[in-house]
Amino acid sequence: MAVAVAGVLVAAGAITYAVAEDGGSADTPSAGSADAGFARDMAVHHQQAVEMSYIVRDHTKDVEVRRLAYDIAQTQANQRGMLLGWLDLWELPKVSADPPMTWMDMGDMPSAGEGSLMPGMATDSEMKKLGTLNGKQAEIFYLQLMTDHHQGGIHMAKGCVERCTVGVEKRLAQGMVDAQQSEIDLMAGMLKERGAKARS
Image (cartoon, rainbow, N blue to C red; front, side, top):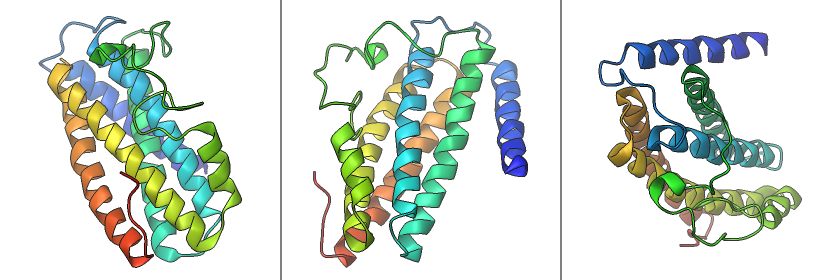
């Protein structure tokens, strides 16, 4: 565990240095900027994906699903550390009084349900349901929830690509778009193998 934590810190430190040295980001973003809003909101969005992935890992023995869940958890935990590290570097708060997605002019959107703060996020009841399922049922529900989650994440990341000004953050956001779309395609195949399909 200590080695893993050290690796995350090194990665976060490296990306923080990259932000500081990014030629296109001489000015520190403001608290109300798209850069800060994306960092705050995507950190919250990623945290739920990590939680979902650890839940399903403990509720199935399927190697393929467990491998996917592990990859998603590790990738998004690392990216979350980078996003929060940038907020520290910019000396900006990690929380905002503004509603989520305000930086995308979506702060007035209605909540999709209890605990569902942003597009694609699972509700509290869906998270609890996932924890009650096992085996194939857990696998299908996880893949459906994560497909929705990734679709919402892609929407947010595209917003950063369009609106953010810090070059390295825009590149990370584009990387999220590409990687999560690839995982959506993979999960569609995994759902089909289990006689199911995405919810939307």
